[in-house]
Image (cartoon, rainbow, N blue to C red; front, side, top):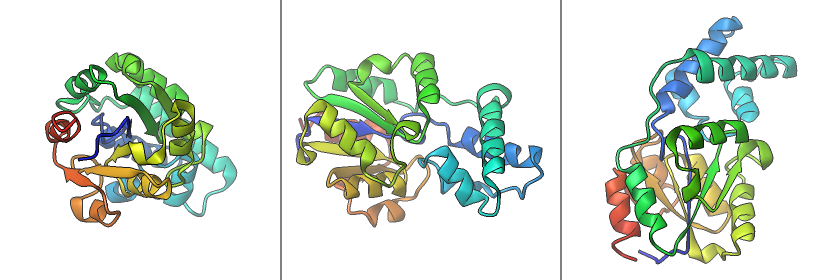
Length: 218
């Protein structure tokens, strides 16, 4: 495994087990607004994208005004009404601690908005681990490489010295579009076969396995 200087993590489905709450919150927003209720798979397919783009994909016939309504209802359910647990995945905090003790730079590239990321940073006491973070409401949405390119420029790291860790094809495509290596994880949204289509350096089944790749091979 390449000795990377910069490790860029996706958040939902990669470090945090939040996929179930995302799905239930979006489905509840559809119920509130009397829209066709999307399937769990439909919602999972947009995780990682910016919220407005995701909503347009799930509900292609709605108006711009309705997009804003769905966005508001989704946020209300996710933050206030839905009590589905969203813990960090097993070994996530330990992995970040271990990486923090090395000379590697850490970053987050997420489909969350800045407000949402800051909220989960505070809830998990993880913000101090990251040297940079970019969100979907301050850059172009995945799979565009914009978030990765912003992080590379900010931290002055060449693309060949960075790797993206993610659980969706959107993460893999974003990294590939940026000319950055990628590692897929199978415990979030997309299965191994879909991730493998983007020629990742590896696909792992746990963060403990990822730790072996990133730390023990450093």
